[in-house]
Amino acid sequence: MLFGSCRSQADNLIVEPPPGAPEPVRSPAPYIITDWKNRTQGEAVPEWVNLWTDSGERGVETLDAFGDRYVFVARNEANNFNALNLWKDGFSAELDFPRLASARMEARMASTVDNPEQSYGAFYEAMIRGVSDFPWTGAVIEDDFWIRRQLLPSGETVPEEEWEFRILVSIERSLFTSQLDRVFERVNPSPSPTRDQRTAFNSIREQFLNNF
Image (cartoon, rainbow, N blue to C red):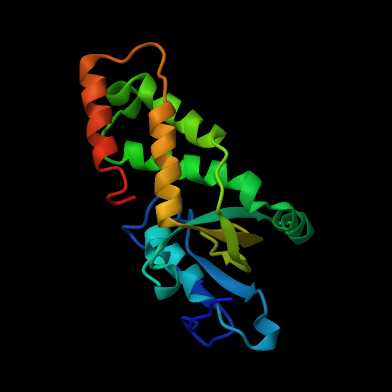
């Protein structure tokens, strides 16, 4: 398990969404972390958890432990700890990785254009479906972590408290790349994209893993 220093040694940690954080990472409002996994054993919040909160997967990939791996984080939140724990226990790197890869694929294709469905045509949906349906191998669960957080109230709102679970998954970069190439080779968009859409798709394919 990877552990880093906690942002504070205080009992409660106040977290505010960084202005430039990717939308999937940002929480809707500032919150106070009131508890976390293994806190009673004196363990701090792992560094990967803080990095993901601040910078997403690419932030976690700056850690030496993941220098040659891509990382993906599955996240779930609710006010029922037992239900989330069951979700965590039932999580499978083999079965759930396609969904994680598909979500990151979708975000990457949408990152350079305003309207990916228009820019890539049927390539857009075909690639997302292709990644989701592909029989990926090599993904492993690295760690999991939970926090209990209290959303900071506004006005007369009663503070809400909930748990958030995160599961850290990684895959060797060379293995991911070779399998992704096979997805690209298999993609069969329908209806047939226009010439401009093919050009846009070929362009992003050539540099797809840049800023992935």
